[in-house]
Image 1 (cartoon, rainbow, N blue to C red):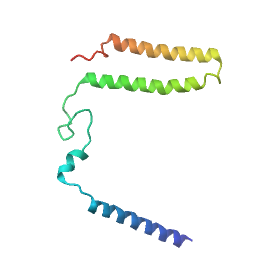
Image 2 (image 1 turned 30 degrees about the vertical axis):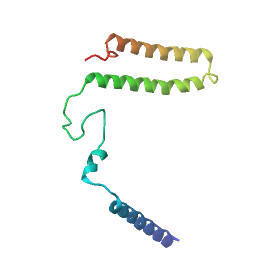
Image 3 (image 1 turned 90 degrees about the vertical axis):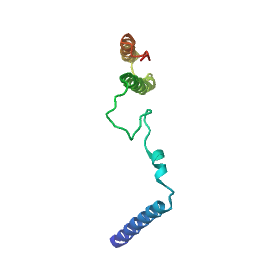
Image 4 (image 1 turned 60 degrees about the vertical axis):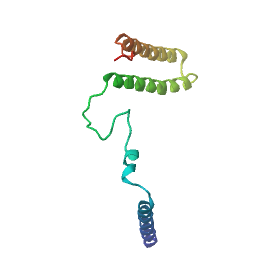
Length: 118
């Protein structure tokens, strides 16, 4: 039984390596495709220096988006637990959560993080 498993493992390894080698030989990659295969992130050239400065405002908008994206992921379970928990506890928790989000939004608005002017 063990010998059969070892033989099957060896056959699988050989076949997978053979398929990868054949795909490398058959593929039509050339030096011109180098640009297509490079990652593209936010309009930055990946082949230039990584130490070039970028807009800090763009970074702040990204962080704000991530915060509100996580907020949505936290609100959905609150909605589903509405019928399973005590109404008073659920109301206090959701009210505190929404107040914290609104306070954060007010702070971002007060700091002019939401204005796209440079």
